[in-house]
Length: 491
Image (cartoon, rainbow, N blue to C red; front, side, top):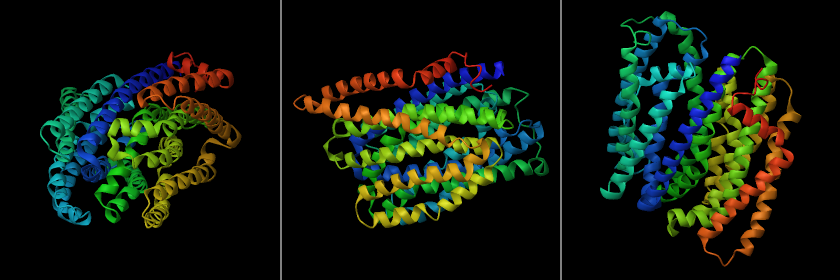
């Protein structure tokens, strides 16, 4: 356990570094593209992103999780899965090429056809290195992963911004940036993987040997597909019913508040999956690990989103320009949505780690009949704020249904501890909001930059003081976790 603990702590530090840097790069890209492109063109870019993210799920087919979850996996199985990934990537490219005209017609934007066809090239590239990265992740070897992801993100973001700013490439800038990022991410893994005899795939294929893994992967794929539609259906419906301009505003607001979930929170959940997998037979340890991760996520996210609610009226115009003022209220409402969506992240890792992928699949399948209905009827009001509010309330209700119907069956009854882990940080964040609002009132005649900086520092001090007073134990546990001394945390 000591060896595992050291690997977990080291992996946590590396993923933290990777997620921090890539998150900052993505925020820079988000802000720069928002200022350059404006809401209408940014809405087109959002449609391209939807297609990219959807295709990425099917390229993986849930097989990376299957490789990590399987305690022992043979060379024949790995080789067979590698070739499955290669041909899947080629198949996705062909499918996107011929489906592009239909998608362009659906969203009523002809330029999407060429963008979708060209971006499909990346899905031929990525599979060549994907399995090698997965094996490194399974072994908690995150050093090379960190370097590779930072380099790929930097190249992709730099090229995207350059094309948008200096070549007037518009939404095409994202297409070429994504392809460049895919090349930088894939080539080092492919070269290193083929050079290593232990990881080099053999020219063999055994369907029988991978049937179990394929079934696991397909359930995982079904889950991620349903989850994708459940989290993107709002943007899809808005794009169809309200057009690119309104979608651009909504997508920008969603991207701003989702950065911590998509970039920072995975530094916790990414490591939690292999940890859950290694202790999957011990319910007591699973419960401790899950509650600790929930508490850590809330402690990081609650003050962030609370601060964003307060500072959005100053931050959005400053970062994006006055043409984005309509996004302010959407950002504020979606902070509530993002907070409870973040809380749902660890459950996916938990279910996958204990082999309950069918649970996640059926859950997401059920949501397919709920989320689109909620989004559709709220969008008929013609008000983005109503869509955002409906999504937030739905996430709040679904979190508690998820706990009572599924999570409790795996980790045991821990409702009181869960509520404490969630609502103590929320209470502290509410106190912080009230104090910051008073401070902003005093600073009313000060310029926006000064208000943001002073409020940010004050928020850190207020929340830090509250943590020292009422969550000192958690601070010590987090500190111990990072310096590899929390031997009892997962023991």
